[in-house]
Length: 277
Image (cartoon, rainbow, N blue to C red; front, side, top):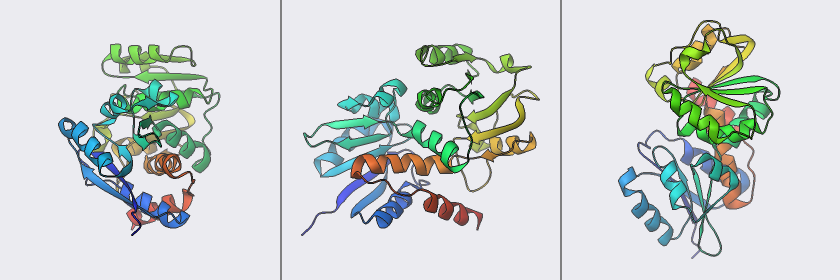
């Protein structure tokens, strides 16, 4: 009897996750035999659940909120991008039995912006809203694209300043509070706060988005998020949510696990058409 390789996503809450569907579509597309499930795992049970999953033959895990920092600490070794982000969303079992930790969020975002939406990052002014784990995972890949400037704004100013300082030397980055955004303009505004899903927005001044600028919410939903609506109201050329990022980061994890790179566009188009229906 052939055993099917097992993968899963751990998180809390996890019921809403589209990851099992995405990875099944990838597997069908690439002819890979695997099983991928979503498992509800609160933070206090994380270590036990991970150890059990791999002891029972699991090959790889995705970790989402609130487990990415715990996965970072759990991994035996980490890729450079995982080291920088201090968060891991992908664990891969290695031939020697060790666990490699990676963070595919940033490359997922950059790929979605560049390849799917033709939004160039080089030479532009970029603002990230929020200084939490979601921000941390995307900073290094964005700086690799050589923006003119990258600013992190956060309600707790000190948190934004400290986060920016961690990436000092990797590019033109700074941190500030929301009040310091008055009279400034940005070509791309990225919302890395979770507040948008519950209809909340940071205090954003008028005129923050430059003419011809774009908005992108790392969160996604079946309805436009509060930030996506804000972008449209402020005349963004494109105001997007993070569904494409979700699919692209999943494709990167799939490649790490299986050595095969799936086509993402058909999956993104399918998921978009389903939520519009």
